Length: 88
Figure 1 (tube, helix red, strand yellow):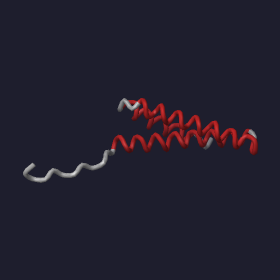
Figure 2 (cartoon, one colour):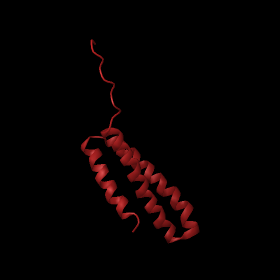
Figure 3 (cartoon, one colour):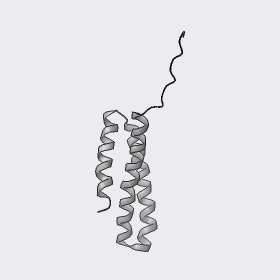
Figure 4 (cartoon, helix red, strand yellow):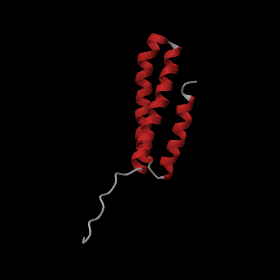
């Protein structure tokens, strides 16, 4: 059940990125999440069995949400521009 909040939050953030037509960002994050899940599954299932798979799934959703949120924050909140000086 630990993955449920991250799953729903990730859906909201990914839809926000889709609405901004940032499809490439979502695709890169999905690839990073898949890599996380595969590596975590490989490492945790041998030690913890089915519980390790559940933990790996939770990590997958957490990593996806964090990366998507960072990407959205970067796209929504651009760096402040320097104010124009008078006479330019």
